Image (cartoon, rainbow, N blue to C red; front, side, top):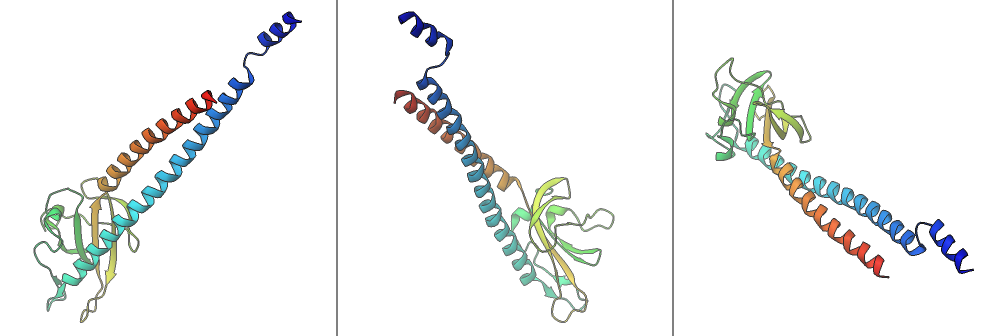
Length: 194
């Protein structure tokens, strides 16, 4: 009878405890992976929402600072949104267009010279990702606005570099990965001890 038990034990490669530990490990890893993906998506969504709020504030400030000249073009301070918008090809940019003609822009987009200027084609209405002049991954928005006393709509566009969102998302994802990996190892070790 002892031979039969040992023969059966050899024919079954894993004991019940080993099978339960394996099931627990697979279940835990799957759950942690799904949890990590959900948390990363929630963080990305929140980071974009906050980033979009800053873009919206920039648009409001740009329009607020625009004062009509008699010719119908806005008169803006040299850098209405601050010094970050001066650095060339930084992704920090603003622009005002009338129809297809650029009538004012940030220093980051270069000089106001016909043939050199590129339109800042930020998505209209809701902020979204796009490629800014210079090939810079950016997030921005544009709004058609009719200033009082003006018969032609002006398009105000604002952009910020995506690296702000991408960097924080990368940091969060890495931190989350390490945290969930340690948690998973601890859970697996605890399941082996039970």
